Image (tube, rainbow, N blue to C red):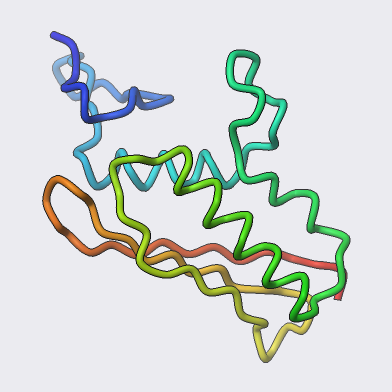
Length: 128
């Protein structure tokens, strides 16, 4: 049986103890999709050359307000374009006080179908 159309195909479905493939629920599927969007460079996917946020291009940038705003804009644009199952509420990019070369990206969103509020975050190392 095929998964419902509202879920993306997971990259690595896991068999349960009886050998049946387990697919993620909607919340997990959306979180996986966002992580894939953020970790993909445009040009990596053959059939979708514009797919991805391209965050790797910021790795050698200085940890400045301008860089953090550019990262926020890239995250927002990529998620809004590639993940239609959510309403993006907020994206914040903040410097970590104890690690001046690191930033924290926090993404808040709502799943359209259920209205469930979700949050996802990641930490990135920049030049400093």
